[in-house]
Length: 534
Image 1: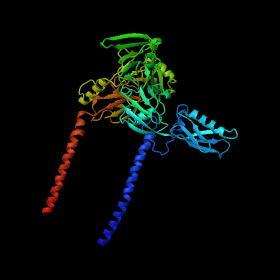
Image 2: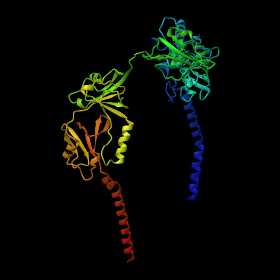
Image 3: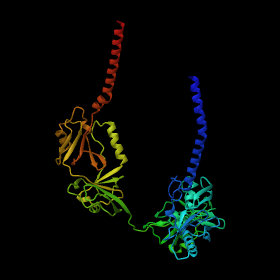
Image 4: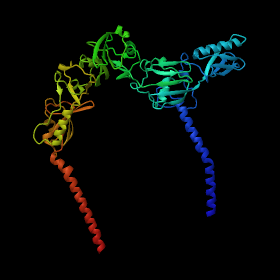
């Protein structure tokens, strides 16, 4: 039996050694191929990679007026109306296209649009009768590009010919765009065999000018340096770039400003330029916008486009609850009132309680505000539990939210950005919770105190803390602890545990339970030991 097992083991070991190297080698090749395909097919604006073996997913996005044909591009030429006449050819390294039975077409380094027209015209000259010629790019060239300078992984990369300069930089920088502020994306040197082209990627990143992000071409060498000259702009602009922005050599102020899209609040009639000289002295000058083209920027210049005077800033505020059209609405700071916003929301419905409507504002209310402010009240009286008192004080100090009641007299309160007007549903009850004999909802009766509702609830239990009764008022998702000087419908009256009851339930009873358990264990052990002795 032992010999039989040893033979089986040796056979299994032999088979494993025979197949294992092939399996491991093929896995390594597969991983390497996947990584290469991932680099070649990186999607624009994404950190994900496409591992599909088909590298022609960019056909629909290729701009024929900007894409230059080169070695490796494959064309399919069809004669419309005659399905049997088709030609396939590949552009060689000299940018010539050879079509069997037709000859060589000197295409040259030209755009895809021009190349298609030239190919169609050449084929037409070889046919006996006039036909419609359809020329299609069916496979995009692959190319090798050298990337050097301010990227995480400089080196040589293989890409699809449908990739652009920004895609190459992302691939060499761990999938991320190089730093806008530290790297000179404004003067990228793209070197070919016969020319050097300076690319300003800010034209694409800030102005969406696709011409500033050209396609790669075989043999490109891309050099990106760290920025050595900067200027900063202070203005209401819509831009992903802030702080110190790289500037080009001999760049005019107007060219620099043309990179940015200004908000409507910017006063573009004038520019304030602050400059620090070599002697450390600062100079400030105001330049009319029309003269900005004559000013050349220098390192560390500060450009300011001031805000228009009396410009009304638009913000948003919301209305929730019982209104015809709840939602968010635009407001003008220090102008739009609560009444205006309620009208925009279609007014209060028949189910809304306008007497309990309020503005929920994040932050503290200015003392000059004419509205009545419901601030957190510190508990008064004797026998205040320390944990409740400290909790109330902490909530008062934090002041996360302020509540402004909306009455007929103060509905003209001016709104602030992100205010929320809450219109609660009508309610006819006051709710009593905690240590009363019959907690629940009781019909609201105007001008009645909290004691009245506590009596309706059967009065205090023996565990009640009579000196620290408090109220809770809800405003949508915000709740507020209030005193009980005035009861409103839907208010919640809370009767907490007394200190003695808390001591009994939290401290004494657990200790008593633990002691009883220990005694029971000892009695059980004693009984078992006594029984064993007999």
